[in-house]
Length: 119
Length: 108
Image (cartoon, rainbow over all chains, first blue to last red; front, side, top):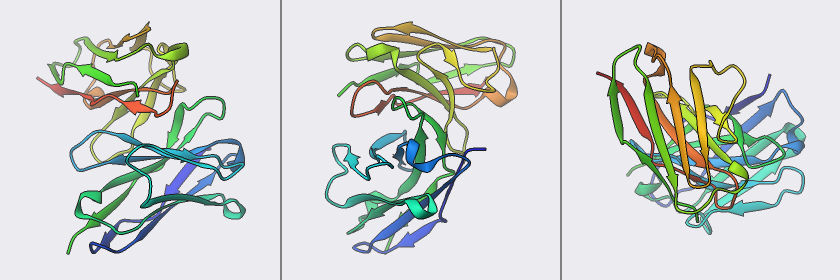
């Protein structure tokens, strides 16, 4: 069955960096894009963009350029989200998710990774 | 960017009642690429409806979606205890993908 398993919670200080992993299983990794979605505490869902797992080309939503980087290691079917120069307002749960391979419909989600930025 | 507005913000209902949730888009959603997700506390969202009206795999038939263009509705018939959650609409027809702010369905 399709599974996306994310790395565990992180506690970081302002200015540090974090790298969240998302390991896929149960399907052909390079046939389906991986999306990243942010959910700040008590807030709604916000699309950060996606990465084409076949070409490695990332697409970033407005507001997620510069400090946010999507990457892949296709040899282990894993996608990564790296955030640099962390700020307190980056505190959120970050979800990876898979689209259906034909449209941008997100059909499977990882369990989420809480990143807390605090001094 | 397509902005999605959901109403009401909160819906307080009793088990067995019907919930009607609205999602309005700032411009027409192409190819009816509108999805609904359910999210419970501490959990990832779950896909309920795609293409405005198609149920995802394993979703009970008490959930139904309708609409086109800019106005969409999620109906939940005969609410069960497990249905009390937050529901988000999302358009996936144009970039950037956008979500509505959510409707919370809670127990009256």
